[in-house]
Image 1 (cartoon, one colour):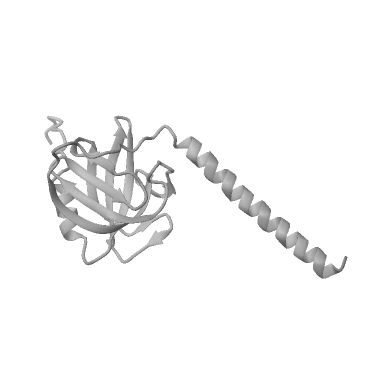
Image 2: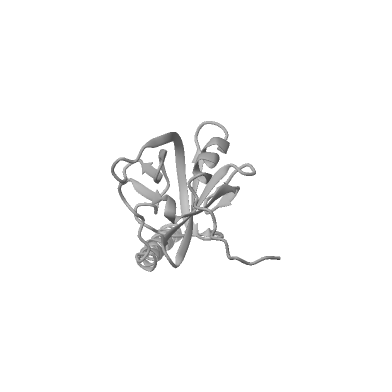
Length: 170
């Protein structure tokens, strides 16, 4: 066996080890995030107010844009459509069941520039902060395919419930 053959064998072994490590890390992340559930299906009689073609980028821990969550079916990037309804927002992603974020679960909608695997022009992403349960808030990032995201952000912000008045005065 020549030195070249040994070098090739070592390179292949290292590549396989790296791929195996990546696979195991992703499986561990999926197990870690399995308690977080994305709500599926659109409620009956929801009236569609607006539709926009989007690229779904990621869902992350709230205010931690570099900490991806592996929430099924939001674990992977996808093309799709956002449908703004009178009851919430539907994420209709190619090859995945429709995720419906009811208005009562929306926490905030704004612009973002950075998330895991994606950096765009300032304010080029739409960040939807939502609560899968009463104790958890996550951020989902979308990129509007055609044009400025202002109209979509405006439509989505109308769905976010007003913050409860704490009664405090300053």
